[in-house]
Length: 271
Image 1 (cartoon, rainbow, N blue to C red):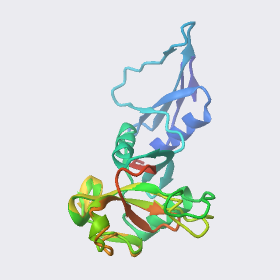
Image 2 (image 1 turned 180 degrees about the vertical axis):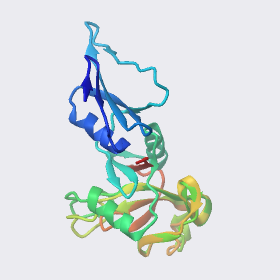
Image 3 (image 1 turned 60 degrees about the vertical axis):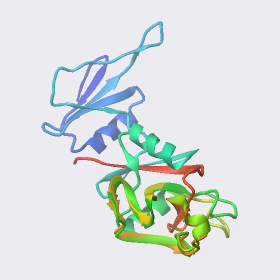
Image 4 (image 1 turned 180 degrees about the horizontal axis):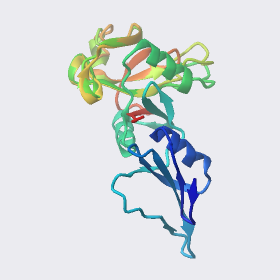
């Protein structure tokens, strides 16, 4: 390890994630550089001037990739996840993830869905699981009602995990305004899981009932709907519920995209 007044060089660091951990453990590290070619990690320190602005150590090497300090990201199966408790609409949640060079979570397997619920949705959530400990996903049917896709990849869902009575496409009066999907917390949420949820990237905003992941615009290949979800089960509800969140038990629920919900962001990293 080599140090200067503005930087700390770590040799033989195996991945970006471990470089981020070194920066997180350093109270003075504000940003870091990482090279996956020579496995070097450089923690950048800030020097306060009288104006309280910061100066950073600048490197000439073009092989180094620059990163903001990655605080509170959690690694799972080659991806990083960040949970945000601030309540946002689905569109604002999507933008918040994009600001972090990430996207609303896209859930590919039952194991990933269970891990997300156990890791992020495990707080005390009172008695209503539908309205407190929930989080947005990237799932939605904003384009075609009833066709849920993942927003980031724009791909159809292969795996789904709907909550009972979801999605709302079986209840037309609700389906058209419930285009986004959240997830419910798997914890001490009492009798109502809707208290504990977070947005995913899943939505059917383009075509009602065709859910897709937002970040890749890919169709849903795995589904984990809560019983009676999505609202296609209650067609009168489906049209207004285009975005998908996750409840406390890991099951999915479609909800109006204007609903204020927690956020789970996802991004991949290179080893």
